[in-house]
Length: 224
Image (cartoon, rainbow, N blue to C red; front, side):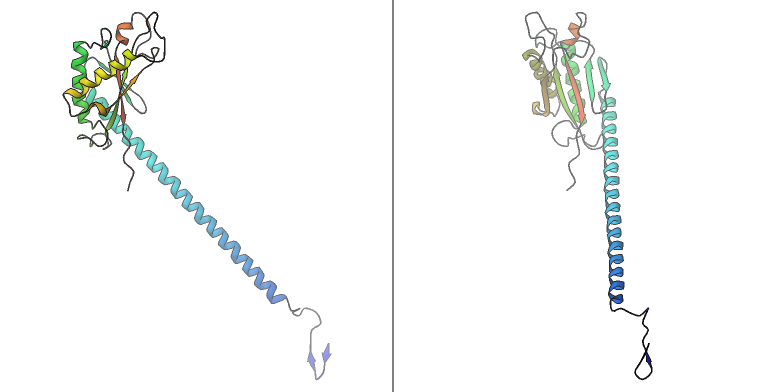
């Protein structure tokens, strides 16, 4: 369309006054979308790194635990003691009953517990790193003394017993007497009468008048 002195104005296809704003809005939306994608990608990377760190920590912890349990097995192997290795601990089971009756300890059991106490001290048993904490990955070990008893006619058939707990106390005395360990370094518990180290038969009753020891690796202190 011709206007005035020969100037031309295109009737169609020209700017309607909103084109620049629409174009700017589109660019802004595109930039926002790109930034959102970048942020999500950064978050995904950070999450993956945290998961990898956790997996690496779990692997390292498992390696330390296995190393400690290996050291326990090697150090505590001795005649008359059966070592039962589990995923998280080592259980020491005496081949013969430690207590002939009540909480009166037999000479073989007393000698074996005294020797085990000396060896435990070298593994860093007790609260906190002991003198041998370097063995087994530097974590040391914790020792639980489990007293066992046999169900008797007229007595409680389950639930633990005073006799079993007294046996654990007596055993702890012998573990500590010739070592650097203290009575408070041991956890003392009574086992259920049905949970002896050997099947609950009449023939096994003498062997179940005993204690067992659970040796567990300590967790390392948290990083400061």
